[in-house]
Length: 202
Image (cartoon, rainbow, N blue to C red; front, side, top):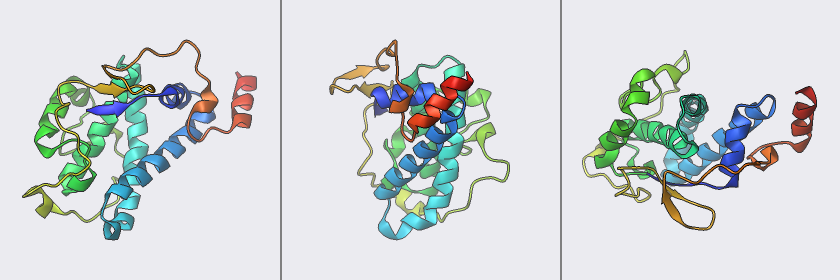
């Protein structure tokens, strides 16, 4: 998959495992991802999918942290969560929201099969053990789109590795090296006063 990586991603990585700011960043990232992918959906379908996407992306925040704790680099940990979301889109026939073509679904699963297997994640069950106890809210499927899939936002040809576009526009395999110092308040949704509070508590 081709993704981007900037100082905001490094700051989010630091923030999601920190007290106080972690919840703020997670909430903001859920909002950002929900709105981003809903913009790709047909307008008349957006609101009926919103609740499911919010819960889906909330769960993937836990996946992201688990992948980091398992030793995956930031870019790969984030790609894992995007793969989960795309599996769910695929299962629902929401091809217009997919980031990679439907014929690359299995390839993306296979690359992280060890992690997915360890956490009960499959293409049919994208969240595995990270799913909320009550399950995700239901949303109407459009399975007919899988018969002749159109995915205008999908970028094919990047299924063999994680390709990262850095802040200066360079595309590298695996992502860049984490900066030695990352300001947490660069992460989406961080309240600088909350950062100060967290520093005082620590």
